[in-house]
Structures are given as structure tokens and as C-alpha cells.
Image (cartoon, rainbow, N blue to C red; front, side, top):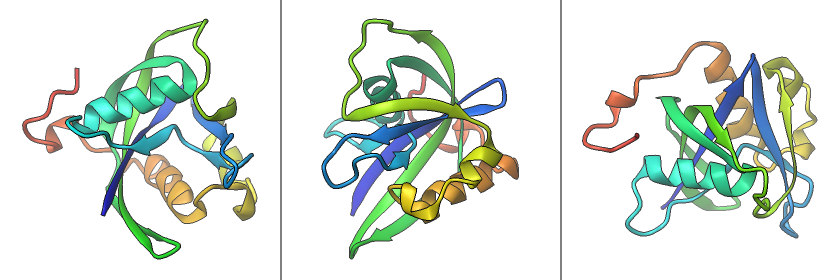
Length: 146
């Protein structure tokens, strides 16, 4: 089972979403997420993926409920953190991303199903967020998230 990590980056009531550039998912909306690398903590991976795909350095502020997702017969664990912007790297080249946009949760819920990379998990994350299902980072024992 693969581990996918990433962030819901929030700022002024809006959430950052990205349009993917890969051939299979070109133009599909997603949050900044990716595979956990060998030797990396889930917090480190989420921060790295967010930076690579957006140019934003973030600080994690909470964790949403963990999902087990089955897509095309492949199972993976999806761990998404809530994050706040610390800084922005103006010269950063987006990694595998066509564009990034800020949308309100309601605007994200209005995106067509076929326009998401993985509709169910993306919508579930917004539902968790709007319902306040954000848990303290201390829920993840023994990890560094600074």
C-alpha cells in the first residue's frame, strides 16, 4: 500500500488547489500531494510536496482524517495536513503542475466530478475541513512537524 501525503493550504478562507501536468491527469484538479519518499516522515513529505508543487513554504497546523483510497485497483493511504503559508519562493518552478488557484470550499465543491484527479477523496477533504474535522498534530506521536 502506498502512502500519499499533502496539504490543504488555507489563506483568508480559501484553499489552494493545483491543476496537474502529467499526461494521465493533465488539467485535473488536486491538492498539493504526492508519494512519501524513503526515509521521510509524513510531515516532511507533506511540506516537501507542497513546496515542490506550489513554491509555498508551509507550517502544518492540523491533520484531517486519514483515508484509505482504492483507485483503479490500487490501494493507498492518504494523509492530508492543514497548513499555513510561511513564505513564498518567487523563483520556484512548479513541479508537475500547470497552474495553482485559490478557491473557497464552496467553489471547490462546485467543480465537476470529471475535473478532479480523484473526486471522492478530494471532496471528502473539503467536507472534513468545512465540518471542522481537523485534529491536532500531536495525534501523530513521535514525529517532527516543525
